[in-house]
Image (cartoon, rainbow, N blue to C red):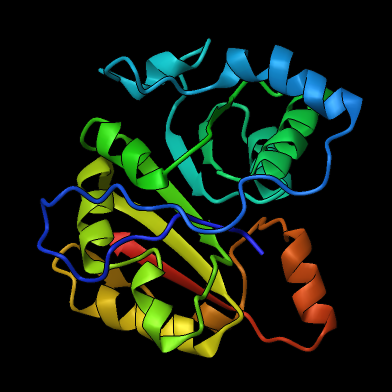
Length: 239
């Protein structure tokens, strides 16, 4: 499952939304090749927040036609597939888990992807650092559902986070959210429906039961489907 940093529950928009990270930073020991990629390739593609980002397009060697963000990219397979299929676009991936980061770097190396940049840390801090109207789309695929009631405030798409995302998304940009946990879907949808910044684009059941065109499934999703899970694919449009 993709692990995303949690965000405080429905806070006043404008309040700082950088969040306390939960979950493991590292998993099993990296291979020598993976460890080498963290040393050699990561510095070339890392988003450095110690310096202001005046224009996110400057993060890329060639200015992209548009920029998408994937929050909590897991092993990076979806991120890499999007970048390979759309070389004219720029993709920023955010992931805290070191093993996932190493896997994404392996995809970048093997596919020679020049249009991916990675941020290793709190997605909230990255979002705060981006200029207004930077993003043409955002993916949040299978975030940690935090099923216990006392942990629900850790779920990522709080009211404050939606306001923060609205600031950096262009009008008409899509926020694409997938989950196989009904409670998480309902919780998220309730917050989006009361947001002044987003519309839910669905017109019929097929709009949330079918994945997006040219969507590349993640490893977690394939396992969930094999176990009989029924994911939903929610598309929210920035007003």
